[in-house]
Length: 328
Image: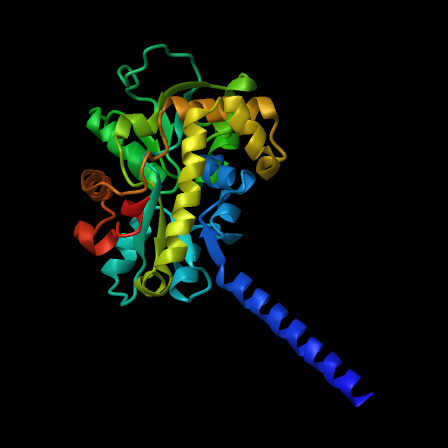
């Protein structure tokens, strides 16, 4: 009897130890990602989920919607997230505040603004000429979409209050409904809102703002130096999975891509998703490599300075760490 109990206890210990090891291993493979918002703009990331690329790399991904770059940055600084997806301007601001273990850009997902300029009237071969004395809805002043649109308009010779009105009174998320209600002549919209506007007959896409502004590190993955020191292997697996998703997005039809990501955007029709993905493919918004380019980094500082939102320029090497991205 005692021998039987002993055997049972040994078996119980073995099972418990096995479960513990499995649990620990699973926990070690978790990456907590905090994304600035849930957007079709990040299609490669959702493709990586849909196609099982994270699982292939042995990564269990936990995604949180940060609802703003400030919240994503806070999550990184307080160790509530391992990797943050946001614009690199947030990294620049935090660096200028003098934070010690400030997050670095470790990989880049998008290389240009993903919004499209929507007009009330159709305009073929639109080149920004002839829009004097019109009103352009900009979004929140200091927000990256507004700064980029201002940069484009300024470079085309337009100055707020002189020969054009740049309206900063509407939050970016309310721009579409406000435009439909009759305010403004032009409005910047991300997908699928831009395609929805066209489908509803409320406006016309006349230009890609990201094409007009040039390449910049628009949306990037960031992590602290501490995380990279301790988990560089996990970061590499994560980036590799995302870039498998990017390769798929660039090499397959818009409809194929839309079908795969539709479960993550279940309130949007397949037709609308397909149209939106096609626009992103046509305007080349995703990075073919996760490595952040120095020239593009300098351009985003040009944009921030032009908007009066940058106290001083920072060095590329202080913000960008390509040590993992360069391996992909």
